[in-house]
Length: 87
Image (cartoon, rainbow, N blue to C red; front, side):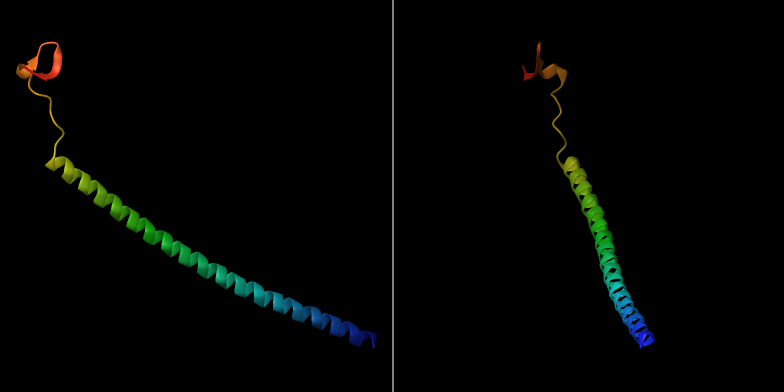
């Protein structure tokens, strides 16, 4: 009778360990899937960021070409001692 009780105890522990292993594998699959989804999302966002950075740089370059910064008037048009004022 004692051997039967020990056997039942060992089988119950084995079943419990199997259940734990199934739960662990399920959790690992879920975590791996979530990690892959987040990695893919990060890659897409990096590409999108690079695109918008390039678009922003291009827009700034186009703006600078279209509207150059004002240049100070030539020296002949300035009042002596007052830079930037026309005579």
